[in-house]
Image: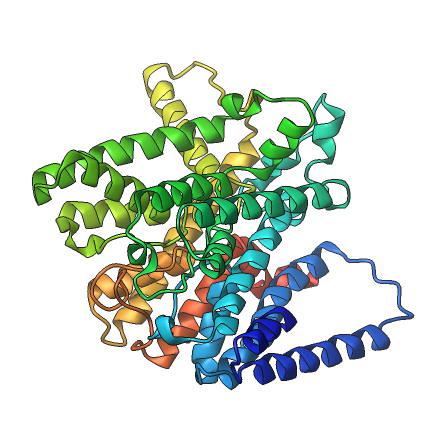
Amino acid sequence: MFLPMIVDLLNYSDDWKTFMISGLFTIAIGLSLILIFRNKILKLSVRQAFLLTVLSWIIVAFFSSIPFVLGDTKLSFIDAFFESVSGVTTTGSTVIVDLDNLSRGILLWRSLLQWFGGIGIILLALSVLPMLQIGGMQLFHLESDDPYEKTLPRIGKSGLEIASIYLTLTLACSAMYYFSGMGGFDAIAHSMTTISTGGFSTYNQSFAEFNSNSIEWICLIFMILGSLPFVIFLKSIHGDSKVIFKDDQIKLFFSIIVILVVVMTLWLIVFSNQPLSTSIRESAFNIVSILTGTGYSSTNFNLWGSFGLVVLFVIMFIGGCAGSTTGGIKIFRIKLLFGAGKIQIKKLIQPHGVFVSKFNGKTIKEEAYYSVMGFFFLYIALFSLVAASLAAMEIDFLTAVSASASAISNVGPGLGDIIGPSGNYASLPDLAKIILSLTMVIGRLEIFTFLVLLSLNFWKA
């Protein structure tokens, strides 16, 4: 909070007092807890790890919301909490109506929330979730002949390297933005929300504000980099330079991007009668933005027609690779689900045949399939429940279903005039914002991490 305070001081904004008060209050609470537990040796059980994982995101979001209440945004607590949750979960949904006239401190604070949320998500995905065997994440905790790979999910050894890579990519993105014509402050703020695939912008029009080919292509590259498994970067540094070409997730991820961009480009040429270059630029940027859960927009994709909206709605659920900053179902689960379907088809043809599916050269165990299918069922069930809850508040169908999909997949914008690329979530009822805030957290924590806390058997075990 003190970095935005300094920025506001340098820009003569009274909001520096807001960040000073918020920062001192947060530090006071933190020091109090340290003093209370300073003589206790804490050893977490699995149950405590689940609880701590969930509470940490909610508590961080609570304290992070204070500047939005006290600052020039003057948000209600519910709106401030929604904005904060959207930040730390790297969702990118916003209730702030006029970003163009906010103080730079608040704008930087929004970017920082997403940046720290992004690195937190990566470390969570590589350490806690494999240990808890969440939704097939045990695949990333498998033993290997490579002694270095055994340590990858362990935060102690690889955490600093991951953080260094994350920072390096952020600085590279910021520099490329700047040298492509983006202002210094905007370059820093957007680099943090790009590599974290968060999507908060400093402008109401998002990337349409810049109207720059080069800036959009730079953004596209770094959105993709933020959506790749960060263990890939680690392995590349440690000598396996070809690992990116061997990873099953990455190959499928790029295949999906190419197919979607080609299809949407052809659609825009036919539907909107746009030039080829414009169609490629718009489809590539916005497809990658929604697929990766970043949520930037370079155009009003509500005007893409019914087919375009259906494609965007479907890809909201997909997300990027496991071990990245993205949300969604994740590419590896999509691959496993299709693999399970292929095996069932083969069994219909050859009832006595024995078939196996592999992921990165390793045979998939049956329990991994059960875990992934359970995750997929709960994902769709939660999406349906949230969408129905929003519809019950007299929210229109397109807004309700796209808001639900956007929240659970941590995408940001929805579809339609209200929450689409040119809208925001400010006009939704407070109860809807509370439900969506909770949905963002549940989606970010891979559903099981949260839902298991509701089981009495879990606490009795």
